[in-house]
Amino acid sequence: MKVTGCFLLIVLLESGFVAADPEKCTISDLLTLESICKSKESTCNCKLACTDVVANGALATCPTGNIPTSCSCGMACGSWDIRNGTSCHCQCNNMDWTSARCCNLK
Image (tube, rainbow, N blue to C red; front, side):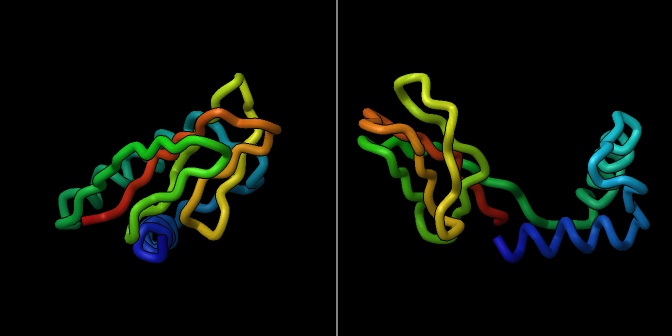
């Protein structure tokens, strides 16, 4: 998480990418960010590696060194949160399964 966060922070600060109103992200902002990331990609010898983890119940924990980037819940539950930066937690009662998309930089 620290590596990913630091990398994105460096990219954003180095490029001068600062939104005037952080609550209003425009398509232009996203395209600018995408082009910045693509230009930095060639100078970075790292690769984003992701895997899915599915578990019974309301908690799916990522392997060591990975962080959850998104979660999915069974029983049409759309309420989830990330706990301790390592696990997806579905907030509905009596969950049958939870899935986490776990990623790291290599």
